[in-house]
Every structure is written in C-alpha cells, then in structure tokens.
Image (cartoon, rainbow, N blue to C red; front, top):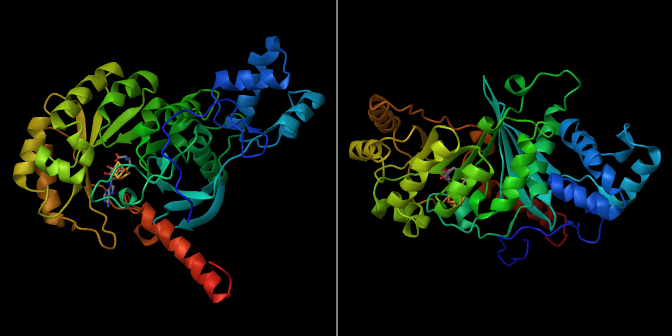
Length: 393
Ligand code: SAH
Ligand code: SF4
C-alpha cells in the first residue's frame, strides 16, 4: 500500500521536477513551458515560437521523442533531450469489456495507481478521467469515498491519461485527419476518482491543454466536469475553464442529501442551486447535468421526482439517472427498473431530458463509483501471486 501523504491542494511549483530526474514537459501551461525553455537556455526571442512547435509535437502528433521533432535543429533537439522528458503515466493493466469499454490502470509518480475508463458509444467515445488518488469527501454510496485521499494528480498526470488512451486507441492524427465528431476519443468527463474542484489548478491547466486548438483540440462543449458541489469553485470553473458542468445532486431535501453527499452540510441545496443558476449565463447558456443516483427507498419516490423538478425550475438542465452500482458491503440497493422509469417519466413530462444511464463495462467493474474496488482487487491478486511464489507481498 502507498504511504499516506499529507493532503495538498496547492499548485505544483515550476519547473515540475520528476523525483531526481529531468523536467517533464507534459502538463505545463504555455507560460510555464516558455519559462522552462528559457531557463534551459532557449533564447527569449525564440521561446514563444518554440513553445508552439514543441506543444504541437507533444499534443497534436503524440510524439514522445525529441529526435522526431524535425522542424527543430539537431543541436536544439539534443539540448532538449538532455534537459527534459515527455512522460505520461505508465499503463499497468488494461481490461476490455464485452461491450467495448476499456479500463486502464495507470501508475503515477510515487507508485500510486488510478483508473481511466474509455466508453465507446454510437455517436461519441468518452474518456472518464481521474483527478485525485482517492477522495477527501465521503459520499456514503461511493466506493472511492471510502478510500482516503492520497494525493492530487498533477496537470501532467491528468492530461497524460488522455494521451495514454490515445496511444492505446492508436489515434494520433495524421495531417488532414478528421476532427472532433468522428474521433474515437471525442469527449472527456471528469468523473473518475476524486473531486476535481478540490484540485482546481491542475484540472484547469490539463483541460486548457485538452481544449487548445494546437493541443488535444477538443471543444469545451465536449468536456464535462462533475462536482459533488464545491460551491465557491463553481463560478471559477465557468470563468477559468468554461467546460460543461455536471453536479452530483442525488437528493431533494437537505436531510437526505446530508446523508448521501456530506459536503451538503457545508453548502446546502439552496446555496448550490444559486451557484448553478449563474453557471449557464457565465458560460453562454449551456445545460447543466444533474446526476441522480437511484437508491432503493432512499431518494427514488414520486415525491422526490416532483421536488426535483421544482428545485431545478428555471435552470437549463438535463437529469442523468444513474442506477446505483452496488459494491461489496454497500449500505444501499439499486432501485427497481420500474421505479427508475416512473421517476424518469415525471421529470421528462416536466420538460427535462431524463436519460437512464446504462451501466457500462460491468464485467470489468468499470462503472461509476466502482473504481476503488477494482484497484484493490488488482492489488490483492498481485499479493496473492507473490504469496504463492513465496515472495514478500
Ligand atoms: N467527485 C465527483 C466526480 C466523480 S464521481 C462527483 O462526485 O461528482 C462521478 C459520478 O458517479 C458522481 O455523480 C457520483 O456521485 C457517481 N457515483 C459514485 N458512486 C456511485 C455508485 N456506486 N453508483 C452510481 N453512481 C455513483
Ligand atoms: Fe468523492 Fe465524488 Fe465519490 Fe463523493 S461521489 S466520494 S465527491 S468521488
């Protein structure tokens, strides 16, 4: 098991050193990359142009080797290779579900592991990205929430998850390749492990690279950040990231929400809704996704559905109903299909889209909230193997 590090929510300082190694260029903002190049000896006058060139090689073409950056002089390429690396998380294992969902376990500095899930659908391919190892919050239905926060991911580790998925999908473009719509990896959701708004700067910097036309080049409308309701960071998300927003709503009274999403004790439903009302205006009238996990007998009555409709009145919204993904020892049960359909119907009739999310990748435990159990299972297996081989675990 990794040792518990203190909780940090600050930005990494520049330049971001790998432990005892050269500086990794992945995840630096354009400004940070510029400063880093200048500190290496790149003439200040050339720095801006070099940033653009290197940036495109890394994020547009997926190049990891300075020697392949053919529009730079040979001596400059050699100097870069001496000072820097282009490093992404290491893929430890990959599982492919019968429905095509792919789950990667990736290792980051310090030996920690996080999961990344790719979900292919007819009209899109969505990558579910993690922002923290574990989570400081303790939502009672979420398995990640039973694991303490180990640390925040760096911007490089967040954007690196997109890069390793593109490696695996073999989707680095060739000149003239199609854009967004037809890409295998066309959408990003920050719905993996962790609360993205408790790692704001790193998430922001990574998403800026994902949205940059010379970077991964995905439209901000194809990126959705999911928060449990960190109210003070919501307006900032609109202003500094500008992506779509999803909120883990899950209940219609403070009493029930306090028990499911404890951050509600800090910022209650009314305070949260106030912040959400302002969001579409700040980002140019986009719909907010209300995520609602269906828990048998807890939050799934007709009265709940009607209350939900009243609460979100006036907010351009869509309600995603998530059948609870059960995990061993979970204190809840999934609502019946009939109950979920009846709930969806009330919301739909009130004028809101209310899709019921089909659990994907169930055979490989890739569904929402199950990400922790899978990691532990993998660990246990390795320990078991070690034990069988007579090695220390
Ligand atoms: N921390 C962020 C994003 C990660 S969780 C947040 O809470 O929004 C992504 C979504 O999965 C959230 O809506 C979360 O509430 C939901 N989720 C967590 N555990 C779940 C489970 N066991 N079954 C169904 N949905 C779950
Ligand atoms: Fe953390 Fe989100 Fe899980 Fe809550 S639902 S414990 S905020 S990951």
